[in-house]
Structures are given as structure tokens and as C-alpha cells.
Image (cartoon, rainbow, N blue to C red; front, top):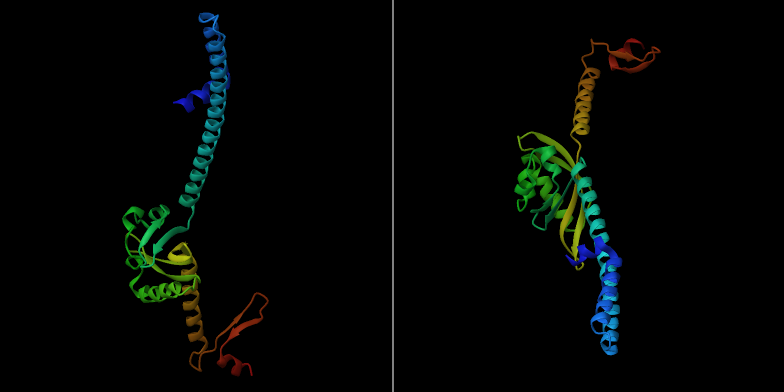
Length: 231
């Protein structure tokens, strides 16, 4: 309440109050110089305290506002990223996960705290992730890729970048930035399948002649049979 009062009324009110106080003492005790001097000293002390309180309250309010803005900016940044930020302890249990996990994958972050990360890994990738976590315990913080399961059971490919959490020089857990790479991995798999089909065509039986030309009618691919045919 005192901080609020001085922030709103300012230092002027404190000075005015002190002048009124000294004036009242002089009026009601006109012949007592010591009392008037004592009132003056008290008024000066009061003004000094008021000035200090005003100064500190203004700076405290400024610091609180700066902290609030920084916290809101950090929260907005974390919640609007398409990357998930999460932390685990040395057993691989979640200690923090950003709220964006719900928007991207359907999981509620509050329900994930305390659970082991393997619960959300595709079964075929769990052994790979266990080996990766062991490497991190030994100081290897390289990026890793694997598949995770969403709330509805669908599969997404992700890439994670780990960093150690240290306390008093000792690693107590890991921070991760997780990026969805499903689109990229899907394109890579489609390319591999296309290459496999093309390779099968190129290595087709001898009686089949296959070739491909670009827009300038230059060869870009042909099978062995066509090479023999064209000598």
C-alpha cells in the first residue's frame, strides 16, 4: 500500500505533508523552540524516507515490469515455436516439456512429467534411443533422429539436439530441442523407393531396351541392353 501510495502521489505529497506537520507544531507550540526544531528534524527525516521509498518503489515496479515482459516474451517464444523443448533427468524421465507438444502431437505436457521418454518412442526405435541416451551419459551430444508416437498413435519422424544440464559442475539431466522432420524423411523414403524401381528397370531382362532423354534429346539413362543395341 505504501509503495502504491508513493508511486501515485509522488514525492511532492511527502514534502507537503512535512511542511504541514512543522507548521502545525509551530502554531500550537509557538514558544517551544526545541519542539519546533525537533519537528523540523523529524520532517526532514520523513522527507528523506519518503524520497527513498519513492525511489525504491519506482525501481521495484520497473524491475517487476521488465521481468514480466521478459517472462511473457519467453513464454510466447516457446509456445509458438514449431520445435518442442523438453528436459529429462539421468533416468530419462521428463522434468519439463513445452506446451507446444499438445498442438503438434496431442500429448498434454502436464501428463508427461515424470514419465520416461521411451513411452513415446516407436517400438522399433526404442533400442536405438536407449543406445543414444547411453552415449549422452558418456558426453556425446550429437543430434539424433528417430520416430515418435502421437496421442492418436500416428508416427512422426523427429530430430533432437541435446545439451547437458549441469549443477555444481555435475551433469544432472539433459535439455533437448526436438524438430519434426516427417516431411523430409517421407521424401527421402519416396526417393529411395523410386531409385529401387529404377534400378530394377535398368537391370531388366536382355530383351527389354530402356533409355531416357532430356529435353534436348540427350541421354540421361539407359540400360545395358540399349548400350549393346546402339553398339
